[in-house]
Image 1 (cartoon, rainbow, N blue to C red):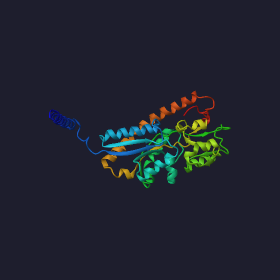
Image 2: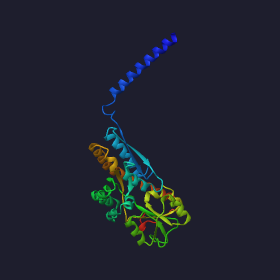
Image 3: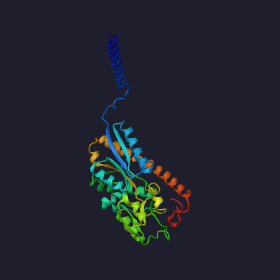
Image 4: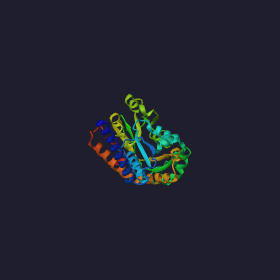
Length: 308
């Protein structure tokens, strides 16, 4: 009997304590934090410490703060070869709400975007140029259910090869894998390269087996995906400084209020300056790593240029 009474007293006491705790939480938690949270997915084809990966994380944090926790963005870092195409496809159908992919990858699905590719003298001029054309570019993206939010500072492009070139830019007879963007194809053909298109999941195997001689890619990607182990020589060029772009799915945006969409737009613009500093740091670090490597990792900089 005594044990039963003790159990009842314990149950009543525990219930009172729980009720007091809940009341305390409600009093202490600021008004608005109990609103329904909207979870949004974002994907980038880079590692977390890549400049665009860092910008994505920064964007997610800003949105969470500015919306007072109402909008939450989950960022996935998909470094699998070929993930760029999948990200663009997911944006078009609303599988993800946001993506940050290179301009060339959008050109493959939207050929009209090739008309905006120009030669710029510096990454700064390139970013400014694409930002000026943001509205025109956005019109073509909108037809594919995407909205352009930000244009980032472009990374340099490079061509990595298994064998050393006879001379700078001498790709005569070499089979180079590259994106199908028309402007880039014309450039590579002009240097005498033969363009081959392989599934990106088989690229390293294709190089190692001799099916292709090299790969055209963003500069920072070269040292981050194991490409340098198969292709020890890299030629960096500046003709096509094309940016990564932060893009939203209009399918996902359609489920948000005008106020929430404005928060996303404002936060996206704030990430541009952050990405610039992250890009500079990453490029300087990559160059230093190359300087510390052995003689096989020769940088064949255009016009004897020592660093970007």
